[in-house]
Amino acid sequence: MAYSNPRLANGTKHSDRYKKAKLPAAEIVRIHHARKPIMITLSVWKALFLREAVSRLSAGRAAWLWLLLEPVLHVTYVLVIYTAIRVRTVGGIETAVWLMVGMLGFFMFRRTAAQVMNGIGANRLLFTYRQVKPVDSVLVRACLEGFLMILISIILFSGAALLGLAVIPDDPLAVLEAFLGLWMVGLGFGLASSVAVELVPEIGKLIGFILRPLYMISGVLLPIGSVPQPYRDYLLFNPIAHGLEAVRLGFSPHYHAVAELSIPYIYGFAMVTMFLGLALHNRFATRLVMQ
Amino acid sequence: MIIVDDVYKRYQTDHGPGKWVLKGVTFTIPPKVSVGLIGGNGAGKSTLLRLIGGVDQPNLGRIERRSRVSWPMGFGGGLQGSLTGRQNAKFVCRIHGHEKNIPERLAYIQDFAELGEAFDEPVKTYSSGMRARLQFGLSLAFDFDIYISDEVTGTGDAAFKKKAADAFKNLIGHASLIMVSHGEGTLRQFCSAGIWLHEGKAHWRDNIEDAIKAYRETIRT
Image (tube, rainbow over all chains, first blue to last red; front, side, top):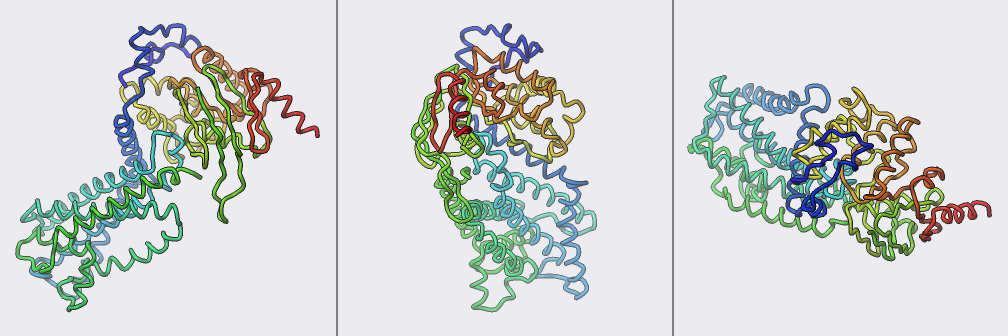
């Protein structure tokens, strides 16, 4: 990496590029010394991250604005509906905060999962470069999405604070812990499904069917705690429902979270799916780049 | 040096595996020898280049690259349409670990490709000749032992072809080429050895003329 191309540094023209390129012996050795795999991976990650960020933020007119407006508008219209039917508090905290926090948590999962799941197909062109592996593009997308969601959350909370809502979390670390868990569940789910979708494209449609009702049953709009047993137990197999309750509990210790709330369950689920996803990526590494 | 050992390749189609494109291809390309691939359409020339470039994997057999091999240039692969030429170039610099001297390399690429203001326009607005210029400049900005060219000069104009020819000539001595071209003149100009691809087999000829002759004979009959 430290090797700098002599012809470029001198600004020499292409035609005499090699006449001047008398390198000391040590340099020649270094040219032929291959980069370490970890260095290659790190530089690929950095390049991919910047590239993904540019294409996310500059695709179409004011792409960054839509990135921000989508969750804002979503929260706003649900909030209007809830205000119209006069729900002032849910489980002991303000409806607006309850909704906003839940939705951001849910988006953290869904956007990460969706971006990661489609990561291989979207970056197929880049596999022209041997250095770029499918798993790289997928991991980088997850990081970028997590980063964007944090930015969006900060902007939304700042806006809500200006409107006089109590958005300062009581236990910020618990909120971060829950957000991280949701992000990891999204990453694990996306990792496994990205391989599955590439190998069997029909699975993509099935996953679409699964993801759609997830919004309803994760407790974004309806508190899980208000669902009677035994159905509540069924809903709590879903790690996202745990995650959303945990985020809200982090915001206010007075929030009546479901008693079954379990942080280890979220992280356990995330770890298992991430392991599965990475194993699939490892197993099918050549199949994924083959055509 | 590149060792291709008994390589088989077929592509997956919507209705099961397709027919074999390469059926037991074996050859060794010695260091510093430029090779031209010749054969009819669909003979597997581009497939073989992609396999040598490490972009695709053979179904059976083994390919060993004991040198630094470029990515296969051609067909607009490796350029993202929504990003500008400059952004694409930066990306390629970064993945090759040249974070520190990006400005110099960009200057070189810009100088070579001669795209003018189009360098800062999205690649999807480029003509095929402009893409070829960019790709060519991109790969020449890095030091490889072997450059792989898939008909990349074919779409350029006369000025670019001359520039490309000069660039290729400058490579002789430290780097070699593996190229596909339907222009026999181009092949003669740059390659000393030839590989004639016919019915899934590769036939190595030490002299490119022999490879061209062998190919011509199959057309006549």
